Length: 269
Image (cartoon, rainbow, N blue to C red; front, side, top):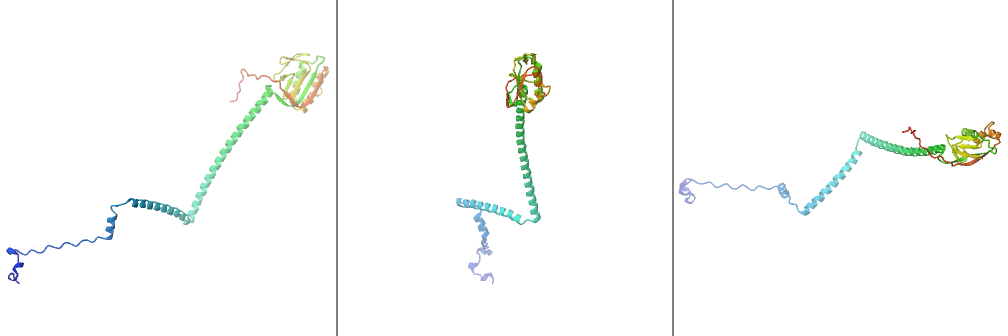
């Protein structure tokens, strides 16, 4: 068909060429479910109630995780190999042994401290006892115990100082521990002076009857005075009367003042 046959109304005016029709718009893209979910979750729009629920769920999940971990530890022991169980048991035994050793060490330290305390107390007691014994020997403290009483009567005044000194020596040799004569304490440096009928002990005058108060073992003291040719026989030759009496309770209470040496000092630290 030529142009002459085309209706006038369909021909472009002014003899222009025909313009093709505009292309149709592309069809709308379909939105998937994942995209809709993502769009709904981000950015988050949390209300207060949702926040509280989230915190509670977090706490619940944390508790479950801890419980599962504890259970898994026990399960790990139950499912461990025999070699692993033996190793774990050895480690527990080693730890137990170390604790036992530490306990024993602490017990030993406590015992040592207790013994040290006991030793210190015992040393203190021994020191006090030694001080008492030295005080008895020095005549600075009173003494009490079994012993004898020696009484010498001298009606003729013939008993000389050296005879009384011989009696002291015999008593000391027989084990006398404390002696006093007419109220004068006899010590290591005691001396007798004067003459028959006028006797002095350490510069103090004493008169007959001469009374010796002696602490020691009576079974040893009395025989020492009565040996043949001893003190009793010598005094009886001078017409003196000698009386020896045993006793279970003799008191020597004459005291000497404690003297401080001028030059001597203890060499102990």
